[in-house]
Length: 263
Length: 331
Image (cartoon, rainbow over all chains, first blue to last red; front, side, top):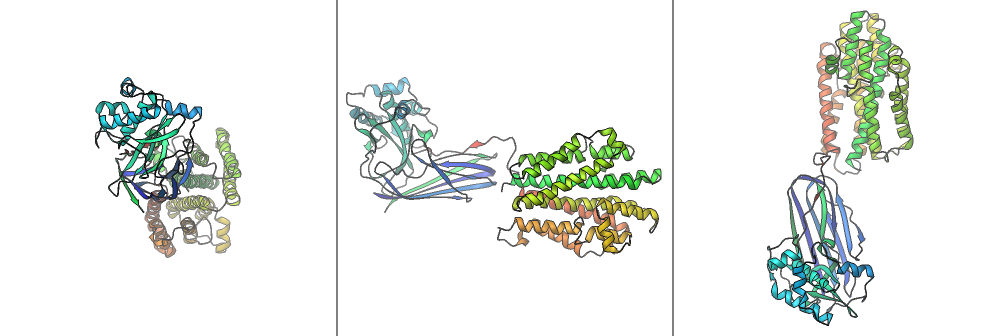
């Protein structure tokens, strides 16, 4: 599918703030069958936007607004061609990456509860284990906006029994990793037939001998052509769409407006 | 460029210029006041302290103004934020913060000045100050020369020039203000008046250029006019203001807005125009003090406006820790 994504982030402050340094992971990946045809990132106040590629292969754009300001707008536009089915470029991991994707993280710790959730779903076939975890998660956790926030961990979301895609993904990460299946967090977008959109998250699980498969526990399905992959990492903390710091004693308000449209 | 850098360069230049002006003022008056009667000398020393603008602080520290107390106060008094030593120290601190912006030659020149004031022996300075004053003046002037000769004349340089000329306009006006009151009490045409006028001119390094310009005639009106309104003498107030305007135009070169829309440019241009069209007869005699006081107040306000416009750091508290931006939850 060819999709156009507009992601507009607005920061407003009730007082002047200064020296804002911002890092963004918004450029769709150019890997695993997906092609990013164009990408632009414009800031207001205007500033030179620099970029680099992080350890996980994600494109990171960063810029700073030094002068005092009360409002900052970041508009990212991308044009991307997605494959109908996710297929991985590489089927094996370096020992370091395997360690990375099996270790507990702040968002997805290895607790007795999380282990208990997935241990009964374990079977001989790793693929079947991963799919069983996804199905169980979808059946157990109720999708509810506002029940959790950006800082909620997998442990809390599981205890709550509610959450959004970010929480589904974190629970799935911990559930897979405790069963020795390397798993990574995928940040991206979902084309929702023109309905309102937000940035989405799901999970890649490494099946020995086959490679990565990409599962969306929120919707209980594998990644399709409607999914746009933007960044991968160990958990949300590796791939937040925006991250930054500023100086000033002000209340901050952040508005995010995302639209995903088909060509 | 960063406002922090511009601010440091601006103040570095101002402090160097201030130290040099104060040094010259002291050096000249040391000689000129030696011949006066005791009562006159004290008044003359007091007028000198007034010229620095720190007369209130001086009155708190010393009951009597004489060569020793004034020299001590102006050279190293720790409580005087505008002592020559303090000015040079602060110029150096400002330069240190922007070490990468200035040339090595400038840094060395500034350090020669700094170590000179640090190594001075105070008792011998009080008995024979002339040599010390000459060295400070030489090295401060050398620093300004090195700056012009070694630094690229881009925006950072313009902030240095802005600081230099701004301070010079202020100091020349202050020196005139401090000395005029005393001059006005002396009988016109007397030997003492001439002596004091020469001291005033020398305080601004203006004696030789003045004589060349006025064919040797020394009287109050001409000297005041020369120091205030001359367009060619680099220490005259009008010359300094015009130089500030020129540097402002260079700083704003990339900005397409007309110069009038810059409030600082407008205020400074208006002040310069007021001087330009001044009839010197209107401000002589008892009108001089209110005129100069008013002028200095306006100049100070413009200085505040300059800080607001270019160095506005109101939102940046020095010890404030950076705060995290909010993050968006993925849904």
